[in-house]
Image (cartoon, rainbow, N blue to C red):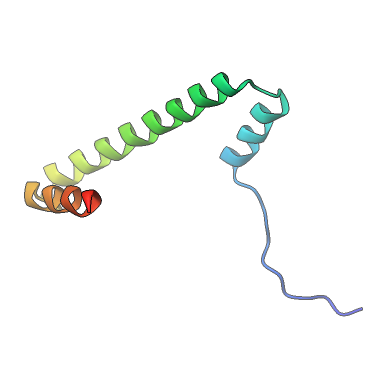
Length: 73
């Protein structure tokens, strides 16, 4: 049989860790808490990177304001 050229579906380390969490069958409340924790983590990480880029002069306050306005539309 000929092999098809299908893309690999290798999971990232984050995905593997999340699968471990789900294997414990968390409650709906625990899932909400996990989603909130992940959202806070990624929001904090983004804010740090944006602040670093702004300090380096790669982005301006005007750029950030523009992004916020686009997000509200």
